[in-house]
Every structure is written in C-alpha cells, then in structure tokens.
Amino acid sequence: MPEHLCLTCALCCDGSVFSRVPVTEAERDRLRDRVEIFTKEDGSLRMRQPCRQLGADKACGCYEDRPATCRDYACALLRRLERGTVTEAQARGYVADLLAARSRTRALLAAALSETPPADLGLAMDRLRSTPPVDRHAAEAAEVHYTKGAGV
Image 1 (tube, rainbow, N blue to C red):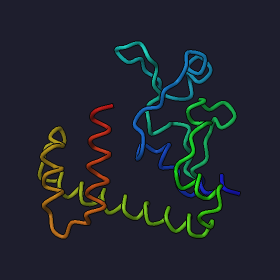
Image 2: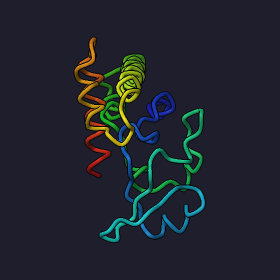
Image 3: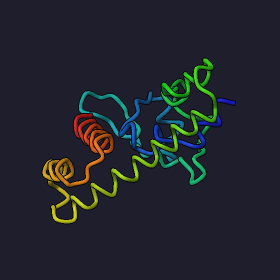
C-alpha cells in the first residue's frame, strides 16, 4: 500500500520539508493540546513543525484528527508510487537516499556551526558550501531548508 511509504519517510512532518502548516480555527480548537499552533501577524494560523504528534515509528499520533493540510498532502514520490511510475522498492530506495543525504547535510552543518555562533546561520551556510568535500546535493538541500525556514 502506498501510504506505508510515509512510515519510512515522515520528512513532511519532521520539519525537514515544512516548518509550518496552515490550520483552521476548528483544527486549532480540536488539536490545541496536541500540537503547537501559533498566529501569524496576518491572523492566519500555523502548526509548527516538527509535529509533536510524530512518533519515533514515524506514525502520526493524531492521524484521525490531523489537519486537512496534512490529510490532503501527498509528496511527488507518493503520487508517482500511486500512479505506478515507480515501484515500492524504488520509492523506498529514494527515501533511503534522501534520509542519508539529510544525515550528511546535518553533519556538514554541525561541523560548520562548531566554529560559528548558532545565530549566524548565513555564515554557517557559506562555510558549508566551501567545506571540502561538499556533497553538492546535500549542500543545496540544506540551503533550501535554511532559506524556506527563514522566509516562511
């Protein structure tokens, strides 16, 4: 079943892909004590990622009550699996590659931050880009996450 792929990944819930998820007032009221929700300056509501309901087994602790944004989301890889353009084994291989790249990125970023005050992430990103050997894809993934996290 395609949804089993999500239990090997969870990048959409652990803060790797999204830092915030839109929620409605009804969802806020229903999930108030279970997830972290805040109000943006424009009055819109957001659920902070990583989600507190994400378990160590990568399962959602509020699956039946999850917000519509979570309910409706399907990553490109899941959609490809559902269409049959990739096999489950191929999809699991892609997820394993993504998780490995994220681990390498985190290690590179940790090394860059070891000499940088944590508040200076821009400088850390510059160091990450110039630290040999740089895994270009890992550095790009870190930069995308850094940029999206800062601008959302």
